[in-house]
Image (cartoon, rainbow over all chains, first blue to last red; front, side, top):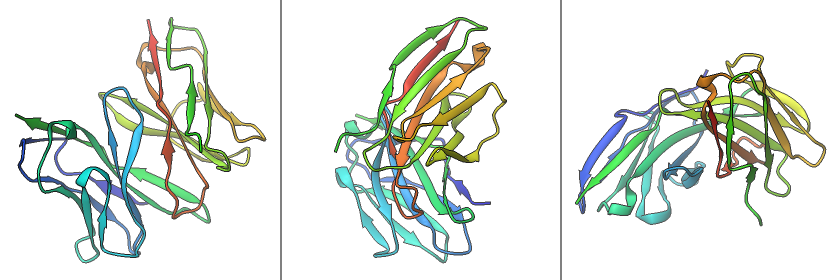
Length: 115
Length: 113
């Protein structure tokens, strides 16, 4: 079964600092990978998606993620944190569960941005 | 295109009651998934419906059930509510293809007293 590991349930960065949120997946074949963001009391919003077209994926709000097959990783980065980036971030994997889509989410990482 | 809608947005129930939550997917989407989100357990998968059939189910007791209608709208029902059922219930829709994105609704916040 597919699994997704997000290292660090809480990450704190200073405003203007680099944001790095880690995600590793378990799969013998390249899956489809997603990052979502969730603001308090809201649903999950898609940040970006990897579908094998390019290993570096650019998303909304200045975020990007790099797919590294050798490391089975899909870490999310942003060069300069903004206060509005404070939210919870989820990494997810979509793969084939016998002919249909199965999506597995990581446990989430709460990002705190310190002024 | 309109997004995923969930009704009601907020709900207060008492222990022992039952509740029905509704989800309307994005037009054309045939897959609807339900998730429970709590501070302690995080985001947990409940079940997924595709073309009125449950294809996948998470590890929840039988008190949690769902269904999907021919227009792809879905409902989930929780019977004999317990305090621990207080959570944000999220619905997500997709085309069902492996490469496609799940789009989430705003959620229904359920409080069980």
